[in-house]
Every structure is written in C-alpha cells, then in structure tokens.
Image (cartoon, rainbow, N blue to C red):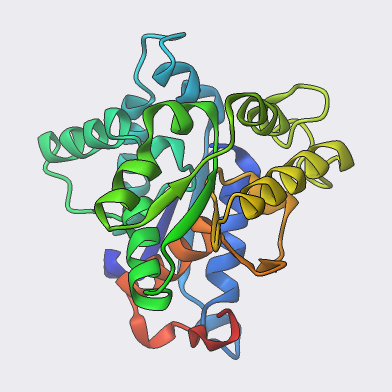
Length: 258
C-alpha cells in the first residue's frame, strides 16, 4: 500500500484531542461504506511527550519536539505519509521548527501539515472580509504570540483576553480537578462556563470570529457561531487539510460548515 494513502495522527496532546481529530477526519470524508473511508493511524503515547506550555514557559528543558519526532517516525514506519499534530501549542516555532529539522536529518518523506498555516489560509479563502479575530489558547500560545504573529502578517487584527481571563482559560484546560485535560468526556460545566465567558468577552471587544486555539476547547464548545461571532475550530481545519493532502476527491463540501 502506498504510504500516501495513510493519515498519521500524533496523539496524546491531549489524548482526547487526537480522538477528536480522527473523528473529524471521518466526518469530513465522502464515504458510503467501510472501504471508502481513508486509512488513519493514531498513535497516542502521552507519557513520552513533555508538556508544550511548560517547555515554552521555561519550566522544563526538554523540547517536546524530540518525542513528537520519534512518534512521527513510528507512524511513518507503519505507512503514514501525511501527518497531523492536534495541538496548537506544538506549532510554536520553538517546537514545530525543531520537528521539521529532525525530520530533515532523518531523510523522512512524510508531509507534516502545519495547522496554524491552515487556519490562516482558511480565513483568507472563506472569510476574506473578517478583520477582527479573537484567539483563545493556552498560556504558552498566549505568551509566544503564535497566532497573533501569523494573523497580523495576514492583515488581521488580533483580540486577546486580558491576563486574568487568559489564566482562567488556561486553567479551564489544565486544572487537575475541573480542566478539560482531566475531564474530557464530558467536559465539566465549570470549564465550559469559563470558555463561554471568554468568548463573550472577545465578542464584546469586537471579535468577528474567534479561534478556539487549544485543541481541548472544541471538546467543550461545538457551536459554529455564538451571536454574530464565527467560532473557528483548528482541529476541523486540520482534518480537512489532511484529507486534501491524501485524496482531495474524498473531501466533503465545506458549504455545510460555513
């Protein structure tokens, strides 16, 4: 079997985010029977990967890029040719660029899809008139301005929570008692309430669209819109990009989403 026919998912970042990406790949695939679905390999080894935010904030010295690279190579060995990482924070250049460097050293032939770039392209293609975009994310993404940098280069004004609200959003993901990483299915009412309050804050600040820029957040909020604000799910966009790279003929029309 050609390795281009298998999509590889680096799971464990968190584990339910990997499952969510797989589900969205299946949901966005044109198929009427089992054999018509695309082949997907999900490898979830969370114990091997350092926390991305902890690394970006200087709390740990080991770059999670190294473990992510090893997992990608394992996926490649079983036939994956196109790889997605369902973790926004892992796309920080301090992590993502090192993954690319390690793949190059290993002479890997895999196509690693950049979720952040795909989100920006999604805006350009589908919402060209949107100029004010809110971003919800982890502290790591917030401090390193990953989304802010790429969106501003595309001529988009970025709206972020204040530092107090940002801390609450981060805790809605990370808190060991009520955070989405601890309780993903179902998400706690308290964590969801924090996310909804943050969305309303960004709306009030003028956000026309809001990026749910942590892959756990779409587990809590599945709406496509809140009020007049469009909610952007990067995992959904990554799923469609992976399908496009493997077999664009299998991609469902986007009309049902927009």
